[in-house]
Length: 383
Image (cartoon, rainbow, N blue to C red):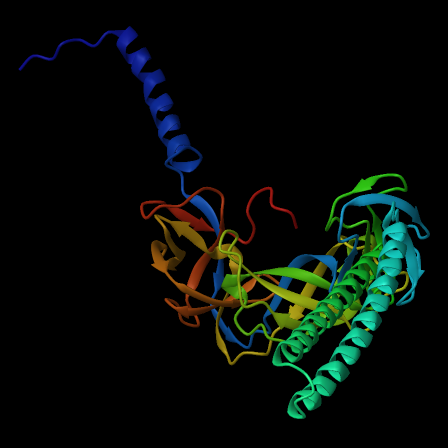
């Protein structure tokens, strides 16, 4: 068997390529796409979790009074401005009555005429009754004819009808005067309760339509916060639970409060539960309506359950789960979550048990084929 001579150039090329291939393989398996992915692990613990909810809401007034005319008209004057405190019954402003006062005086004059007409009709009826009674006696004594007696009876019926019409006219006049007087009173803008002027929507001289609010009055003692909480972690939320409130304008300062009620209708779009939170003691100065507030609610304590960091939970192919590690093999384990606290921990109802090791952080996205190696801290992570 003959061996062909190997050229020196071929040997030199092989001497270069072999180390390069070895270097490429080393790089590919140690720091390239085929390299193991560094991960940090966490151990599932069984402990009591003190769940809490965090939500953001807006300051609102429980009672808001919108004050305006019941008929269209021109605003004559306003005596209050935004920020003024008013007492119940105070005159805040007035609409221009135009000719309403003249119409009331005209109706009062017509009422006097109707009253006089009623008096006249009553006297005529009384006279007709007396005449009818007298002619009835004369008829019995054969001192008058039946025709004259029938005439007197007819006169009595006519005067009775005239008295009834006069009564009706008088009642109609009184009703019209009452209606005009009530309409005149409605032109006065009166505070229905003690409160704070929150908005002034028109100025004197402006034309205001019926039902429009010229002023908005709020009761500052009924401020509350309309808060939204995530439905996933809202189990156990109920009226009476204590709450901590941090106003956006008072960062770092916490106010004590409580859940007044949980709304029976949730937001189907954002998947949030709505609740009303009230202050135990109103802050001074009063926060403006509409200001943002952060609310933390401590829920009742739970029995011991498996607890994991929330950062370990992943969603893959629509399933919620964690990467569980067994002998350096990765197994994606679907889980069912329970309550969470504000420290980033969550309880596991199904899928894990105490002592299981799971991936907390990884440098890259993991798959079942990923090779991993365990580190205490990911490269470049904050201490």
